[in-house]
Image (tube, rainbow, N blue to C red; front, side, top):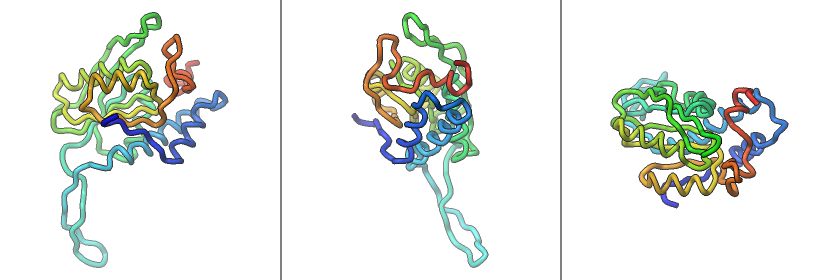
Length: 209
């Protein structure tokens, strides 16, 4: 599908396998989520704009590239998306960070927004939305819609695990937004959980099982 990028790097695939294991404890799970986010970010940010600047090395003067444009914005979907933020900040320490809160109704499986705080000047920034799990796609669709309504134009989304149903729903709603996926899983079960998945990412990140 256009604008859908599924990661194939062996390190990403290996670390996602470790995430899936039910024996992986909270500390290691949290560390792996950060590491995967950083590795995925390296791929997703390959087209960042640059400009040439004059510098002096210990040897001579030279012209070299640096990042250009407004500082990117990282926008995690609360709460699980928070687990990916530090991995991206390791690559983009100057980035702004916003937050969008979405809660899932356990009966209808539909998302309900409860919080939104975004950086200013969204139209001039690259906005990276993070959520470890793309299940039905409802939360990510609504979060991107909110960002667009507040002026966001250049948006990329990063999810560690995705179900085909969620990918289809998201690309239908936002065909202009690039989606980066660590692993595309088989399907959703009757409770709208990803199979084989890794359980509830938020509970495993924050130890609230």
